[in-house]
Length: 297
Image 1: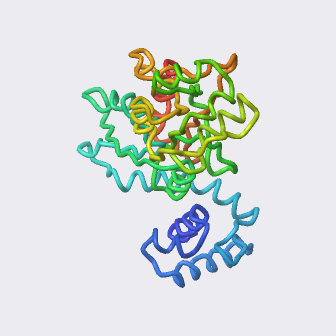
Image 2 (image 1 turned 90 degrees about the vertical axis):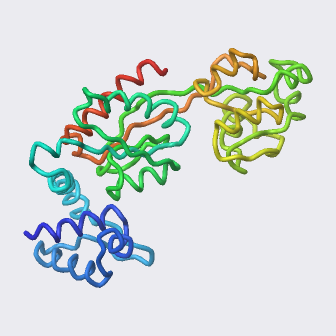
Image 3 (image 1 turned 180 degrees about the horizontal axis):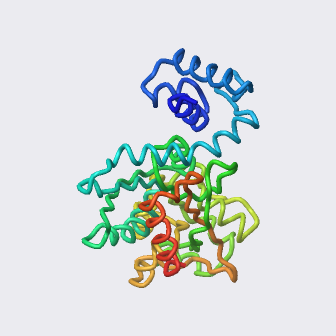
């Protein structure tokens, strides 16, 4: 069987459409369509169901992708790094949320890039859980850190750690509302968030108060570190991971507005394409992050 056909097939399977796969492969869409049809004729089975928006793999398509993808990834790794002794440098492509990746994952992984790092180089990309998993599936990343657990056999997820969420604000808001007071006293406090949908505040309110938040977002900024800075400056309340605001809490820049008996938690997952842990540099980074995470919880 032609390996080029398998490579095109795996790319289509990961991309979910002939158009996106063609762009990734540098081929025309008709060429991709022709290669998939050739492979389907050789196998005597349809591999994809054509739909208005993209394609969906058949059961035989999923099975073939599950078996073939890890081996193709390994072959690509060999061709990209070369076989001579001078090509020992391995690049790890990591994707994840900006704050957690910057504050937790990257400092841990940089310990593998020194003299004892066995040639590990790092390239990081920031984005949403959906973007990280899509990029991982398409082969753009080696590892992804995600708050969403992927489904299906092509991606393998391992629980990395839990983060505790804390409701905080500048001290003056605690003085005005009375720290520890429930929902009614908090309605007067403006909200600082990362998105108009108030994902962190809404999740906290649903978990702790069993109700939606009453106040709309006053300051919306797409980075939790900026949310912390705005909250400390007095812009309003915010829900933040404890690891991110621990130093600010210790300094008194922000204070807890409410401390439930059971604080809300969010789980991070470390995700790889199934089979790629056979690659030594991916396995080493994966294991290192899991061991490092034991100190983060």
